Image 1 (cartoon, chains in turn orange, yellow):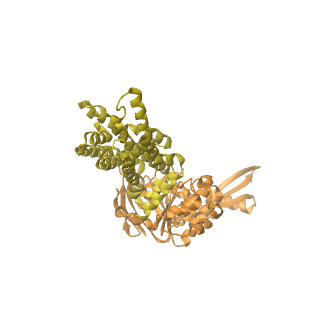
Image 2 (cartoon, chains in turn blue, green; image 1 turned 135 degrees about the horizontal axis):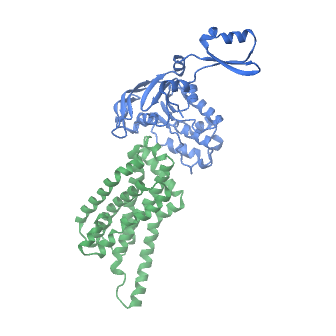
Image 3 (cartoon, chains in turn purple, brown; image 1 turned 90 degrees about the horizontal axis):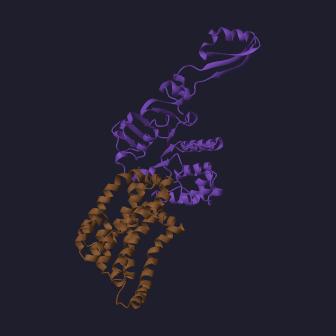
Length: 282
Length: 238
């Protein structure tokens, strides 16, 4: 679906995106993860044909991106980080206008509004919408022409937990419909929940690429954290999960029933990112 | 083409939805009506008052030129305000990654303004001319004025960061259209200093009745477009 081979790009003479290669399969949610300024958005801009002065090869839907015509956009949907909507128009008018730009049969506007719970507000001006409503409307705007590939830039950025959950469910629903989804985010939790594979991007380079599960498992083992009392004071202990038998203190505490709390602590994608790149995401 | 026409329809709807922008589309007609019916009355009054055969009549061509050059400025104002709003809201960026594309977006906005300006600039002077401008002069100046509307649009969009700055810059860009006054009044070589303004050559074309002035007008307009393009594309097409 998407193939990137030896990609180099620079806004100036200095090379910013350096030697990036990867493939995205049909029906996959593929995430770009990295801190601000790492090159995620630049990569996405190259993939959607906004930046054409690259070297190497970038093919989307079998087309070399730098040579595409406007028909290229008939099959991709883009949801930028911030809503791009006509504030003075209603939700329905916005969707009708944006769908009118596409030559192929476009999705039913009311059905789309219904899928994100905006049908009752279809005739309300977008300027009267909350941030969550705008984000949902912006998301379905990218679906009006039923594209094969979706590019989503920080889809849950700035949303409250409820709206963030709704947005993630919408993304998963599109994956279930067979869409290929490219997700750009610096939210590790979102990436872990949504992505089939993630690529860590730092300083314009691809530092790692695998499934979130594999990335976590490849790194150091999960740990066990426990608390216990000693001389009336609460104390903490920690050992690797695959070395519990060797932890004499833990074993003795268990025998004496002195454990107050005990739980396993798996590595998060954020921990793995920091291990691999030496950078935090925020 | 479907996308371009849809985008243009949306552009017109946005203009109709804003009283000030709609007024700008109607303003050249209102101005033409005032010129056509009030200026001759004023001329009759002034001739009687000063006991002369002509007071304003020698300057009718100037008023005709002013009317025809105000048209692109007014249309530009409408177009630029809509585009600045679309830039602020990120819609311009979104439209450029739709089947409309960059070229389609520019054509549906600046291109159509130029086309509208040409149509206006043929119809309005034909109906409202005071000096009896010839149809050839009207047609030629209409095309050249359309080019001036593109230059003004690019100038404002290149430098305005928002609608407030856009309004200020549109007023400032009025200097672009007043080159014709120099062509009319300054007959010394110093007058050619105003030749950096395309409207100066439109003035020369009409007042001297010499079609060769089309060439410097086109050249100067294209130089402005080339000079503005880098900044314009960074602002609008990035």
